[in-house]
Length: 205
Ligand SMILES: Nc1nc2c(ncn2[C@@H]2O[C@H](COP(=O)(O)OP(=O)(O)OP(=O)(O)O)[C@@H](O)[C@H]2O)c(=O)[nH]1
Ligand SMILES: [Mg+2]
Image 1 (cartoon, protein in one colour):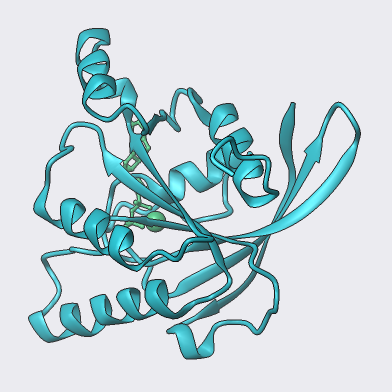
Image 2 (tube, protein in one colour):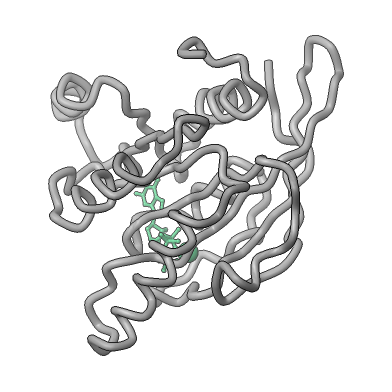
């Protein structure tokens, strides 16, 4: 079994040009519309309540935040490190149009240019699986991800759906994962899948 045993904030950057230098492809990027539950998920995965601030003001996190993450394989006690990258929420309507354009350019630049990214994690609110902005993000990732990069869709706040609704969503998005950060459901599986992808144990290799 894989667990995360340590997580610490490294630095923030306003854009891809200010991103930390590195020659390893070990970034796991989390992206979501504002308020989808990205900070809550980062905190739940790392078991670290204050790691990414959970705010009640949507769109508050505008910098790209980097975290050093240590995984442990409980069977072998082997430790491995990678980075979680918390991208600012996109599609937040209440900012001015020009700010919104700059901001989204920042994000698309990062996604398209940052070679260190290994895995894109796109979080979607399970109650709104078909928003245009998420469809555009999925398409953008699909068009821009390189062959050595992976994309994972995760539906958040799954505690808000009953079993029947969850089954329907699962049928419609068979490759996606589901999580509830508040109920801590689905987090172990996410950690295992991230680990397998980043360290090359993935089935699709
Ligand atoms: N029911 C439920 N609520 C959740 C869950 N995860 C997050 N929330 C709530 O959703 C709201 C937004 O959560 P955040 O984690 O701050 O979301 P975010 O995507 O980081 O938001 P921004 O950084 O502001 O863009 C908060 O009120 C959380 O308590 C969940 O799994 N279930
Ligand atoms: Mg946040």
